[in-house]
Length: 230
Image (cartoon, rainbow, N blue to C red; front, side, top):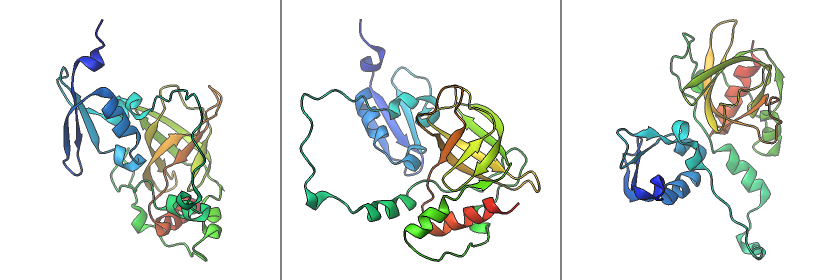
């Protein structure tokens, strides 16, 4: 029996750059999507020859983001030293990858763009800042997570630039990358970000989500200041 996925050709379309890739097989689509940085995945639509409409890759076909790893007969050799990157450089690069905060209206609450949040003083450029950026803050904010066209509402136990601890466990249908809105009950201000589920959590006890890193150090400072203020 012919597999439906291999019977038809696929197309990819980037809504931001308007790039169109045609005549792909499923494995090519899967490899291309799984290797993209997290923020870039949000802009891609996918279509197969037997479909009536385009679909959003991230929300409707999360399986295309997974790589199928196979067992090798022997492990690869050691990476030559000249190709290794200093760990401090890797950590700094991570600060500049990730997602931008959108200033859209969500659930009748005013979404405050990160650029509008007051600056938080930054003492240094290095590891000291990284440690401070992930400081946990005890705050009970209203949390709205949207995934696979469903919405899950809960409350935070603590928040940080790196992630959140939630009062309620996440339902099974929340997986992969989702949109998260953090809302302050006191004034209705909110920010909207991209999040993922922290791995290695027991089923029925999934309370932690990770926020995709902001691209700029200053934006991380502003988000930290906003999260800290009641």
